[in-house]
Image (tube, rainbow, N blue to C red):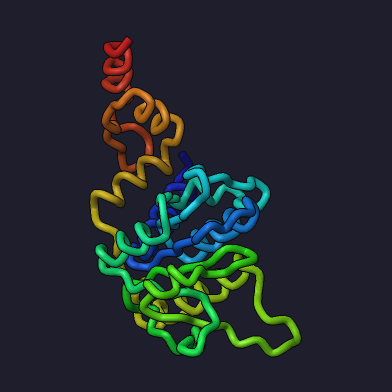
Length: 227
């Protein structure tokens, strides 16, 4: 772990916005899901929620460019359950969806806890999901086409959300709690040991200030005792 790498990891964690997320509803193409995850990472979002057919999330490596390592992807069994869970956590759910009550996405206050709902490639947001959402947002189109690709729409909305939050000073101090920070710091600094611990149900060992194990000999002894 080089000092520059550790500094970048810490800086990224300090910018994460835990009360901003994306929810996808049956977005089927791997490349679109992966591009959405990549945009989430770029705009400081720690988690993406997916309603995915079969409950298995797939990443297109060339699109995600490793972003799946830095963003937790949470799957849900249904859009109703997903929206309910997010609302229970205090999120307002806003669908990228053209309806009579939709407003320009730039007029929405993204400094509120917000989940941005993106619908399937062809069908868009379902009527069921739209009815459950707090707001509907549109991206004004100035050309002949009617809409953006779902991943592009997501990136545009997230860019506006990040702009508003930057302006409001929401990137000025760390916003994820200490436990989450320490968990992610370990997982990002030590991915191989993370996988080892998760496979065997072991607690993560302590990290030193340099991002390396504080007591590598003690961890080795623990591992040997498991064999």
